[in-house]
Image (cartoon, rainbow, N blue to C red):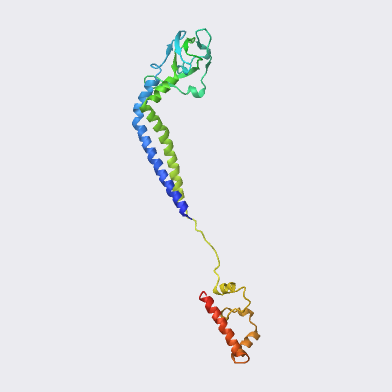
Length: 270
């Protein structure tokens, strides 16, 4: 059974579903409008051929300036991965800097070329202890590139178009899913059969009400409510004799008048 509180809650839920739906549609439209431009800018900033710190052919080495706050990733062409011991980074004292081999999830973060194709895979990650010039050695047979991931990510976030596109995509679609789920719940609640509250209670008769009202009085119930089952033959004979004028006719009339007045007053609500 719908209560006023349930009705108010249902109305509030409908309002929020409509708001979330509208906001989701707006964000998705923004994402669609900015998708093309933002994609071009992302490719431009993540293109390995244009945004690397150093490119080394197989068997070569080169100097590169690295900073302590940077995060440096060595990449190579997919299908031409270098082995872990084929990539070395040493400082000016000749001490080798330990690198970290990317896990399977990190290796899925491929980098694009100038055409946008994801053809570069991470093979080693370096975190240097201080700002200095380091020597990067490529002891393998394939070309490698070293990238500053923090610098690339910073350039992506600083671009307004890319930022708006990313936020609208990350918020628009989840809000749309939430609004859809909320709408389905509201629809199911609205179409659910209403449960009727049935109160089964026996209604007391006038006779029962009068008896209950006068239950504390030690007097006979007036004539209209006499329980006939409890009336004996002698009582009926006494009443008949009294009605013929035998013994105490005046007193009996006064008693009947009082009982009738009592019933009338009760029936009138006095």
